Length: 82
Image (tube, rainbow, N blue to C red; front, side):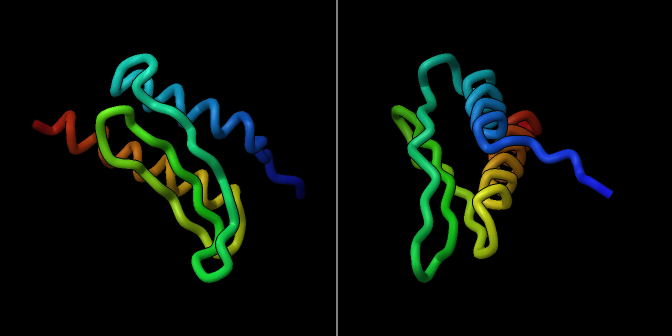
């Protein structure tokens, strides 16, 4: 059975679109996706006037992007609770 996999570029576009919808257009830039020896894969977005938001995974870059998206959604949900 084959799983439906979303490409990395599609995930990056989805993450930046979600962040831009919440923070405002042009406020977010996707910094990158890279592998570090001890930490594994790291996906990172940067706010213009704020902290970076990262997602980490030891196994794959796709999981790092998925965790970044989950983290971003948690931040947005907490903001909307107020």
